[in-house]
Image 1 (cartoon, rainbow, N blue to C red):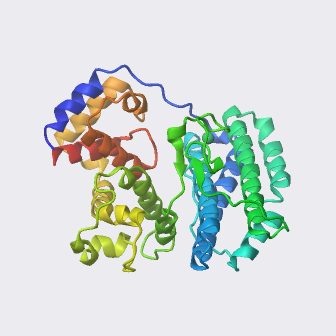
Image 2 (cartoon, protein in one colour):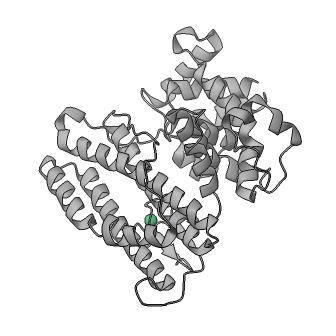
Image 3 (spheres, protein in one colour):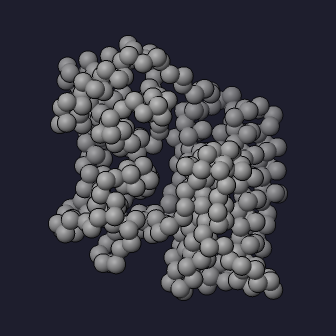
Length: 367
Ligand SMILES: [Zn+2]
């Protein structure tokens, strides 16, 4: 991988500087940050509930409803991620436990509860949040909370459609054959998506079909060997790295089952893994090693080469985190570097590179 260093340095150091997202002072926005944290925690828990409902529907042999719950879970995960990233701009690390606590009934009951209680009260709940944050005038937060409200309304429509299709509301309409979720805002589309997301206008390559990946998310969330930070990382690694890996669709190497990495981070020994699970399993070893390497980085104990690299990056881009997203979108990096940047993003949970991320890249390139 040594030859990568030259390519990366050339590409990075001769590009114009990038614009960083605005930063806010948390003390000026007590209500806003409190609301964002409540929403984040709620979304993390809801996602877990919906994944458990998907598993229940799947066990009952109802693929369509399993897919509906998986779409709701995905939508919640995107809302949570957007709230987490905004909280980071206030220098607040969003925290929530993956503890489940959902009472899981049979699928018909789960759907009815959701339509009649869970989602039926969204307007009351969100109007309280909107009123709380409005006086502090953080326009970005106001817009994001409004969008989350609109996404919840869409979730409600999707659940009602699902109920109509099951005949639970006395109606029997055609069940949607598939669901897609916009990775930018969490909007759920049933059946064929349009060219753009109707909510945020993201183009169709950001609208992701719902498959079986919910099985991975649920396994990770329910894995007692992983701490919450590790769970978040494993999910991001799947989303950002495993799905784009060249190994996608291949059978995992049989040696993986006996590895310590798999025993900690893996999906158990069920044996009938779907294609998404195989992609995750195939990348488990790299995921575990990257995590170990990342957590061993001590910024107060860097060698000269590492210090020099970090300094070079900052002398070119100024202080603070370095955002390479515009250059990545313009296709300026090699496939190998794109891969490393995806790994770094999964590790940190943020798009911009901190000093720890920079050292991680430097050490990975140096290997
Ligand atoms: Zn969208």
